[in-house]
Image (cartoon, rainbow, N blue to C red; front, side, top):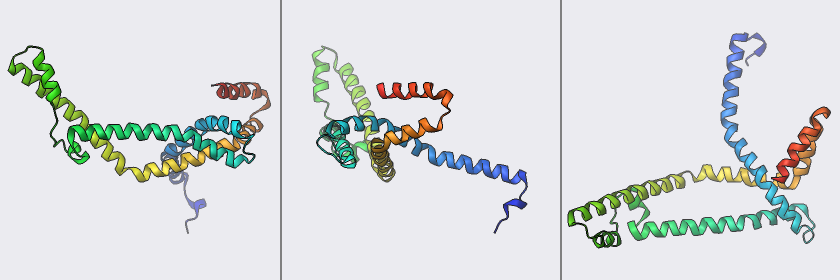
Length: 203
């Protein structure tokens, strides 16, 4: 068992600095998610207040508000991703082929458009090759990013879990948090902080 009282200041101070930096490095991403959850909780609280006359329980009204808030976002993400994957499949085949930049890209519409300009065959072929190369690199980059995103699902799941809990507790107990802040600030600065909180609510 290490006796901290026997350690010198030259040992304790660097140890405290290292532990503080590690703590900041670990908590900074979580703190960002919690703050984002607090921001989204404003919207959830507004929705829950609208449905509270029909659902008397605070917890249940917040949960229903979160579901109603999430539905359009989930639908938007679903249709966006499905259309993106459909475009990749139509032009490149499978996602794996696109990520490997090993696919057959249909360039017939672009080739026909270049021919209609009345350019020579060599110039038309150069245009088609350039456009094909650019599209291939761009979609290959997007496909690799999508594959990387899929591989980071466990971390994203943990962040989403923290975000959901942050939204829920801020939406349900936001009044208590604001009241706590108002209680701990000095009385001489209360007007300023009240204006900041009211401005945040207006935004």
